Length: 336
Ligand code: AMP
Ligand code: MG
Image (cartoon, rainbow, N blue to C red; front, side, top):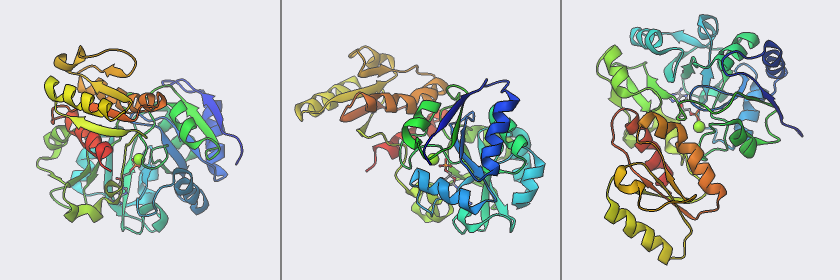
């Protein structure tokens, strides 16, 4: 493929002609990057094996990392999911459309390529008007892994998709920056209590308000249930060092140490105590609201990468609510 076309659309009221163009690309087995409320997704026809293969190739995604299928309503859901357990129904009613992915038993229509051979499929109804319009115009479900090169920070703007996948995606629907900026929360509802396989834009607290106790898949023991979380993820090109929240002495020591090693250092901080330690383009102060910190995290990692820093030192956050999701991403980004 030679060109990647970019079409600007309104995030709230997308032009039907633009959506129809994108749906036509999907019908021909092409790839369309589309905005969701979490991050941009790399869309392809869930029932077209050639298109699915192109998704893995474009991203450089390991074939043992299954794809999430995006649906807009019960029509697409029925084709893909064999059985919706009661707690899955409750969660879907409470949080769809939204940043929640449910793992359920799949139908025979869903290929092994999509699920990496698992007998389950991950499904989400995204809460973005452009994503919903695209799925409705296309008619079937579309796979939608994050539209980045595998391992890199997820794309929260069309330009991130273009930087990573230019020449490998036919069309990018550009509806501006995404609001949540972190991926969906993945919950396996084939078991009871359900298991959170990946924390994301929907917090554990809200899930438990809806269905009571859930377990979290953190150990390697469950690794096989959530294949994707084994791989290195969310990492900028620079090395990431995670620092303790609000500890100015320790933070300063890390900066001195890295600079003595001759490293070009970028920082991301949020607390009062660290906000005024330094300033400038390499020293990014994000709001301490976790909603906004999450919205800007991946974008800021990419911006610091573009400044060619060697190391990014990031101040940790309090580990509850969205903070738990953010700490998960920071830990993964700082591993390896
Ligand atoms: P991504 O689309 O890149 O944000 O990642 C999708 C996530 O969903 C990965 O962590 C996958 O391992 C997980 N996932 C997708 N399908 C399944 C499935 N059938 N069972 C368990 N986890 C899944
Ligand atoms: Mg991803």
